[in-house]
Length: 195
Image (tube, rainbow, N blue to C red; front, side):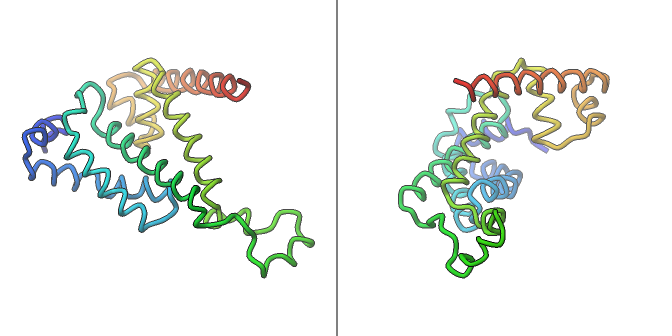
């Protein structure tokens, strides 16, 4: 199976088959990622197309130093955040309790519509997406070996053992790197919250 790097080199040469191979490899992953951010399947589908259009039209912007997948996810995330901002500006989905639930508010201190994720309005979704983006930036500032462990365990959802095999290090090293990465992320997150 050709590497992402090879396929991107071919895309830079306007090889449509290489582009299709990347779409086949990552299209569904990106769609799920976008659907989690936007909570809108139709928007996610449109944003997948826009994401891969950017890959085709701006292939030369990927310098090959980081992973292609991380670059692709960054494009998708930025497009999703822009989409949510435009939804918020248009106020397509006001964050109001449905009329039929107004009577229930006196019985419960927190109405069910506020707890159900599918009922979240664009403002809340945007805030969550911005927090994810801030976390992504903090992870990006970690030393390479710790950032890679976080990527493998949390983004790729590998077990500690599989991450250790992938990196060619003992499992204890993976656990140690992950522990120190999380500790640093927590400290930097707190620092940003207080500033």
